[in-house]
Each structure stands twice: as structure tokens, then as C-alpha cells.
Length: 104
Image (cartoon, rainbow, N blue to C red; front, side, top):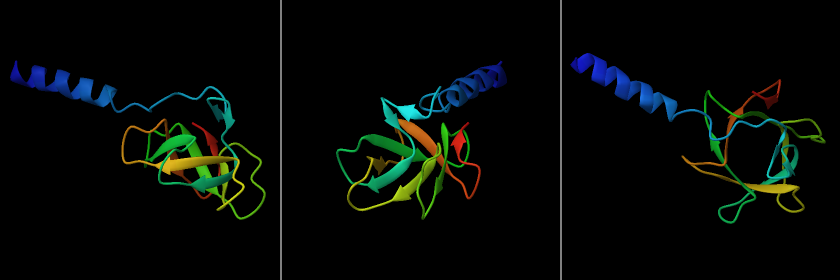
């Protein structure tokens, strides 16, 4: 019986580890999730949590024009949107990849 209770608790815990938000399209609250991105410490457009698996979006950092879903080019000024990297509780979860960016 104790094992059954522990298993039920573990199952509930894992259910809470699901992605922060399923993204049906490559945008968050009207912000397209590609283009020039500035990483900020406060007041971001999108709070992101970097994860190894279970991401909403696969992100590839590029040094060229970023015009496909999940392609982000880091800039200081003139960004299309800003992000803040947070340890938990992000608006979306991203996985940094070296190829094949986009929705999961």
C-alpha cells in the first residue's frame, strides 16, 4: 500500500513537470518566436526556462538573419523581443539545439 501511495505521488509530481504551455503556433501572446532577441534581467516580453527535455520550443542561436520558427539571433539593441532566463516558472520552456529548431 505504501508503494502505491508513493507511486501515485510520483505520478502527480511528474504531471506537474509538463511543459509550461503547449504552443500551437510559433508565437507567445502575439510575439513571433523567431528573430532578433535581447536577453534582459527584468521586464521581459517572454520569461524562458531552459530545459534538456520537455521543451515547448527548440531554439537555435544563429549569427545570420533569423526568420524561421525557433531561430534566435542575440542582439543588444533593436530586438524583436526580449527574454529573461529563469530557473523555473517560465512562460515557455526552450531547449537549445544546434539544428532543427521549432515547435515540439
